[in-house]
Image 1 (cartoon, rainbow, N blue to C red):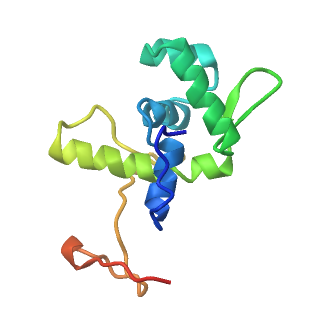
Image 2 (spheres, rainbow, N blue to C red):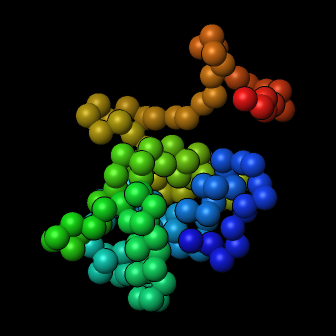
Image 3 (cartoon, rainbow, N blue to C red):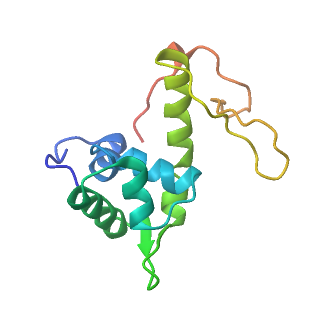
Length: 138
């Protein structure tokens, strides 16, 4: 979807940005995930996005398998799309801490209990020192 592809980058994050890194993309996905939007008109009204840009982003999500477009004209998140939800949650938590606290908390639908993302090691212990997190090539 991006005008620039990261073909020289051997990095999953770069590949993911090719699918969801354009302007408006994260907000469209946020509205689908957390506001339950499925209709083109809902996204357009909420975001006040140019119709041609919205159409392009939604078509890109369908092509990438992040959403499907039903015969009823509704865009629905696929499993691939739903599994992006923790990314939006993490970005929101970072924004709450470092930019401006938002008006929402994430909760578990059935119990209403708060949900927080955290890093855990392979042994289940919580990782507190983010500077200690490294990458290892597979």
